[in-house]
Length: 231
Image (cartoon, rainbow, N blue to C red):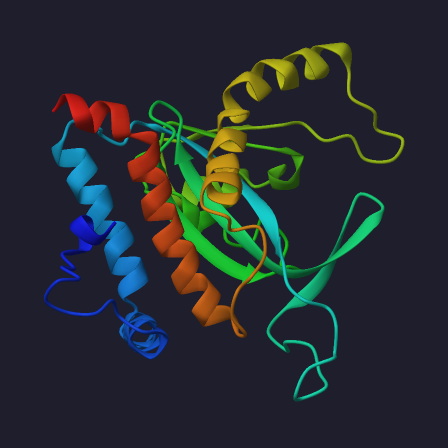
């Protein structure tokens, strides 16, 4: 790590906590996390990892401390709670758009946890898609998809509501779509397990959004590491 960042302990000391904190604040104030993510994307495309015409969209909740045992005695006002299944979660939500061929992340949006998955959908598409995959949370979003990507076909999963149950044909179609959509779970696994983004580290959505962009860039480099080593 010292060699990678160019630190020679024989000439200078390792950066202290204050130096690292100021550097992080510099990234946040100039929105450099997003620019780093975009630059990594351009580098990967230059190395032959082109964005294809299929996109998988999905979102995951990143937990935040719900305790009020802190200096202000309040929870983070920019974080909110959302119900998933029968359990309530407090925190933010990471929305990503993933390429169906390479599994690389090409779009990232950070919101509070109570924002529905479908709302950031247009911002997760690059505009040249011919197919868009997503779970049942994105059902009925054909018009926003067409508005952003005119050539795209809606391959989000069917959703049964109340008395309107899915037919056997619809269930079979959902299973076929899930074989493609499941690729996004590997991406979330890299973000959460390899780079440890399971919980928010800072107070405020913008700070954690900056971390999300940087983590997405690192995840892309991690998933493309074998290809890059051959180049």
